[in-house]
Amino acid sequence: MILDCTQEGTWGPSLDEAVNALGRGGLVVLPTDTVYGIAADAFAPAAVAALLAAKGRGRQMPPPVLVPDVRTLDGLCTDVPDAVRELLAAFWPGGLTVICRAQPSLAWDLGETRGTVAVRMPDHPAALALLRRTGPLAVSSANLTGRPAALTAQEAHEQLGSAVDVVLDGGAAPGGVASTILDATDGLRLVRAGAIDLEALRAVAEVQDGG
Image (cartoon, rainbow, N blue to C red; front, side, top):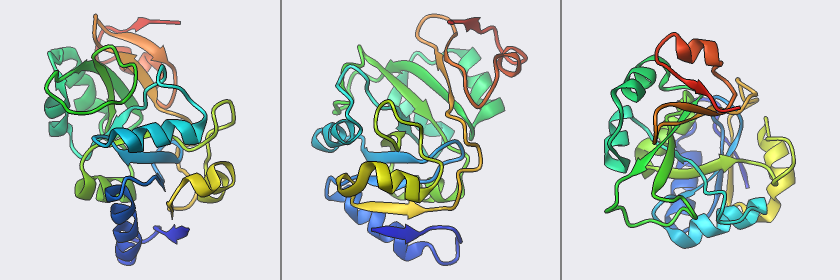
């Protein structure tokens, strides 16, 4: 079902449906500041497996995790470098995903992560409102693997169909470009260029071009 999520004053019932679906282990499409995402409870392994299956993706490509607050980072990650904190102060919430070492005590299964987790705080009011109610969500772009990322709720629904329980329609994705990904597990290395360019990152910290 596609539910309106464009106005903060009226999106309560839509978020309720999304929270309920996620709590049951279902999948939800949500708007973000970059592209639309498909979300699952990060701590429900069966839901994460369903997310990967919906996209046609294997465990070797684990989904990133969206968080509602920069302080959540330390609950999910360990040994976070100071340079990463400086980057997050500059670009969170926003289109920057950082790969850090995961807290070893976390009871989750995101796939073949090799002990890491990719984390982002989106700059979108509806996404943040949902995350504040659910906590961290495993979220990947709302498209079939190999297809363009969805920029509207309708595009996401057309690609993912019945695999998703709830589609939150927040209008056209304002960014239209996927997030930039940095690997911070051994220095800082650009993994994927995206919403934030390398020059902007290097104005804050020393980042190697992984390309």
